[in-house]
Image (cartoon, rainbow, N blue to C red; front, top):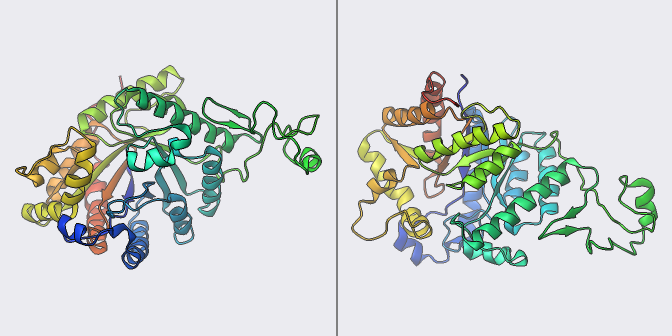
Length: 408
């Protein structure tokens, strides 16, 4: 069995001494000099990852974080820059928040980046859980943030998300497209098409077949360019606990990116196999599954604990915990213990970290593992060192692990 394909994901998180220093420097997310340094040092990590044999490097789409926690508003720009700098590593984003995106623009942008990367490109999609920016950028579809709670807002978000992801696929794959969804129509106005386009005769003669009807109205359109890869780049979808999201991925052949504990990931991975079979896919257990973990390696357990406090506590306590009610809050918590009890943050000494990842891989021989570092709160040199330990001393040991659980 081959080892998993490793993806390194970075935000970045603009550094501060602690939460109080972050408050003193408000708004840190607007610090020009700091962001510029962090942005260019980020490239050094991607280059190091490529040299270490990492499969992919990923960015995210998050907006308006004035505190500087997750400064990643435009993954396409970042990916296009990386495409000109690397030669072997895959690049991508996990991912575009489609409930707040125009599907045609996403299809165009990602197709161009796929060409820039010469096919070493993947595309991630996400539903969006942060109301601070989802509710602003998603206002034209009345889309709000969601935590997969089966509420009316949650179902609305899902409808918009699934509709627009499906539209991106059509734009990638079809020479001409007509989009007639519940929340998005194109050409617009959809009932009449685009009437009065001055160059309709040229489009009718030299454009894609069927764009222009017999009366000169533009009734379909053609998204250019087509992606470099056929039929399109690999698609990843972020999943926390939502079974409908897993079913959506399985029936479309998308890759599930699991931001969850091992037991929940195991259940959802089994569901993926079962749902895939209903739609004609014979997935093996772990195929197209991606486990997500934040981790640190320390020379001692004490050093590991110190890294948790220095690099992860601020964002976990003050940013993640308010969004997710299952995470605790309060002033008397042993935060280092609580971080590791979360099930998605792991590590310790090298040997302990190796054992923790072997446990995951033995249960679910996932095709991908995404590792996340809170760079640049964690300095560039330490991120590269930990990534080197992971790629040279942990990943090779996963290849020999015999999975204990297989698809029924």
